Length: 263
Ligand code: MN
Ligand code: MN
Image 1: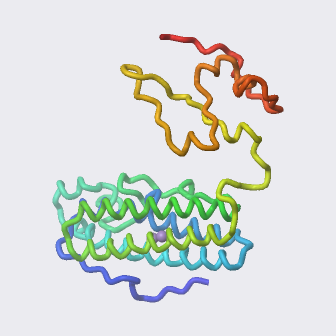
Image 2 (image 1 turned 90 degrees about the horizontal axis):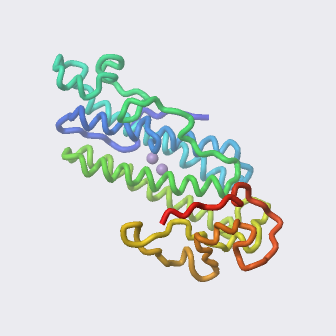
Image 3 (image 1 turned 135 degrees about the vertical axis):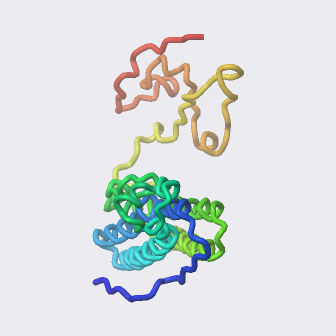
């Protein structure tokens, strides 16, 4: 059940309206990492969630995101409202969609005028996988708010954006701790085990030095437990890659073709 309270979650003050900035703010209203996407993603994950504790978390944060939508929508409208009155073609050009079709109000489009779409949502029905999507979504929302703050001179607008940006970090922490509290091995997803051996092979698929590229990098992503498989060996096909011989039951198609050497 949803109940609307006629009060913003955070008070919004705008000194000097800036329609161009209002248009940018729409990215967080109807954009890919915006508040409607967040609200829908978490709420619908919550509907699908059979873990009552984490369902509560998803519904809490999903509902808070709706309140964020109201704040950012109010803020965007305050910046865009002058477009309603002015007969200034230069201002109108900032966002013809809003001025001509929407009359200076906000609607569910991103800053480029693309309509909001459910394709923005990441919902798998696998709780730990969904929580990972949510951690990444919060990180993206945070960085978009940070960029908006960097493009804003109005103290009142900055203040509201700082609040919204901060809440995304709070959510990122909550989702991260919820995932950790599930006690799952972070590299174990789903139930089917990955193929032993193959899972620890790092394919050095981008090679070359000098004019042909930079030196190969080494880091935790391809050392330690990883076995590095060099590109030229791909000519032999994946079946023969690791050593001569470890038999594998899997087959990859398309690897028997010789790779043409151009050098
Ligand atoms: Mn939010
Ligand atoms: Mn959030």
